[in-house]
Image (tube, rainbow, N blue to C red; front, side):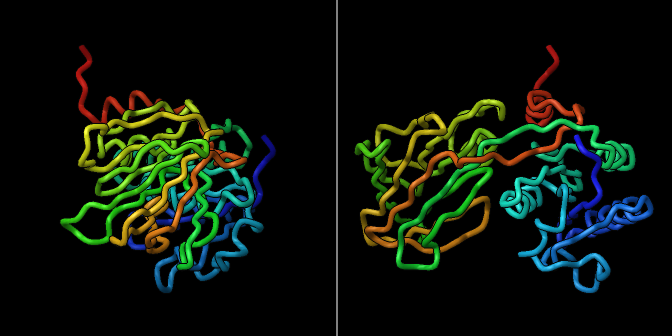
Length: 287
């Protein structure tokens, strides 16, 4: 890989440990003549003033992006880096997560490898989420983990019609549905009873949330396949991509999900193994 001269940092905005770790990373990088940029909306008030840049100019000002936080911060950084196909490295300042590559004690060594271009790229499937609605959610969105359609009010089911590859499949009576990538299979989809997929496996998972029907299993589809969800009753539904609510859907609105035409490019230093992280997360025994 080429040497890195411009690094974008995306710290967790409210976690003091992440902000301090980002300060340490910025100091280390600038002392080696590497420019640093931080999105204005991701800096704590009064912090990082010399590095701040408007969000819409961030990607163009970077060679790589470094997330400092947990998996949620990685998803935020992925949304900022995706348009420019920028490589993305995660520094873990949270609990044990699935996405962040670097632990704080290895920060200096990892940044040294980063700016020297001594890393590999792990390409992750991204969802293209096209919303057809008269509301603010209308348009195309991108998700590294998942798109979620869920009921707006407690205590009531919603009805969501599903088409797969333009053929009607079923109508779910459920609390909602989750359309996830393999990367997102360990998140909401898993909590709803979906399978765990290796991030190396290119697939899309369709998982109903608390369905009130006999068919309550997940479906595993290819990334070139298309899932269309249509709201078929007048009970409110919200759509959420990677943890961000983007709007309310009403009867007749639809959401089409398929694999995006390009991946998120995750930086790997060869230090973490997905299956060992999974083992640690669930406290699985050695024997």
